[in-house]
Image (cartoon, rainbow, N blue to C red):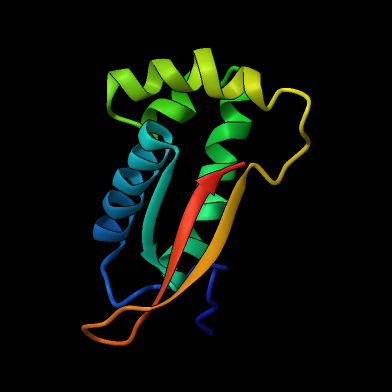
Length: 113
């Protein structure tokens, strides 16, 4: 019996999905907000929350597996992790922006709280 393991496939292969969310998380931590589709935004929140938690707990290797950019990696440990040290969770917020003009897809803004 095939079970869905809690994440959406988004019509992509596993390697494409991992690379896409790695790039999206890198952009989120670099700019502290990004605009994307609602479904991708909801999936990105769990990934970003886990990365922030790993950074708060000093797990450098787990963060390095997802964040490849050295500048963002450094910013994550020096700026973002200390900012959320006292916060138990909920560091990422998703705000609905409406529909995209071209294909009427729900668009959302993902930003750090």
